[in-house]
Length: 372
Ligand code: AMP
Image (cartoon, rainbow, N blue to C red):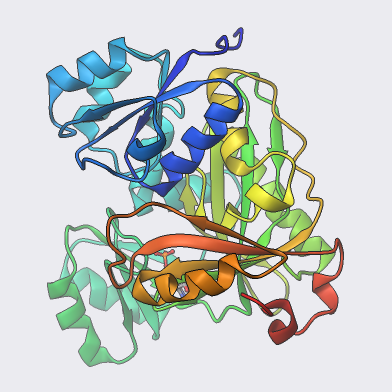
């Protein structure tokens, strides 16, 4: 395909910070964005050239949106199926519907990872309490029971530690089917992000090591402090995901690192990912720029990092309290998303500490986090 010309309009479905940072990257490349979301004054809309405030079910608004843009992308993967179908008939969607569908459903996602040769923890689809009992008998305890759809940041899952945990967890979690996974005694959680262009070219950023607090990403260390073989495997796995999904855009693969150095795939996000925010400041072209390049048909940029980096998410009122200190700290690059209120547990911004190339591996956590 020939690339969209400068000033072409990119549609972004969803008004969150991922769309905001994509729109900012698009603007830098000379494109305009039209953000479509139900919430007025969302982080994405604040920086967009054009906005539609409408429900994802509003077919007329979707048709007008489609007619006003050259291509549509998504800043979240749980786009209602009806909205996707309405758009797909009217305008090119990147990534395409099939890629989104695979990532909307944990069963489809795990089956896909298995098919392309990315190992995953043993798992079973669960329709009934009897199936849960049988699956626990096979996989053992502890285990993790998850909804197949609409789970994020730890919502929609329960750790089962004892036989009496099964019935209440099964009763609480919906919609079904659910997925039961063996509990993974991981040494670390890592993620890798790939971009795949409209021409099929793939570039991969350095894998990052991620730490969560209260089920929400707290810190990303880039590059992940990994054995070289595991870092290579992470790159190969995420590139296989991008190719296997026939994706145009950016995709993140979250993985567990086992104590013996093997990696298990956990979750795919077919979009820019929180664990790649460090690329905004430590690479010449961020994950958002790579995403926009892919979506408009430009060649992908060099994914090499020019600094090591540690990213801290700013969450809720505590994040807001840290803000004045972070903007005053040299070597820290602060980002705020323009959310109307800093509600507890919500991501309101992030800050990235830049470190000299190659220095992170020799630092303790306390040293790496200085100033963050
Ligand atoms: P997820 O929504 O699948 O990304 O899971 C959220 C978090 O829960 C992960 O980042 C892990 O910290 C933890 N977790 C999820 N699945 C498992 C598992 N099978 N074993 C151990 N921890 C898990």
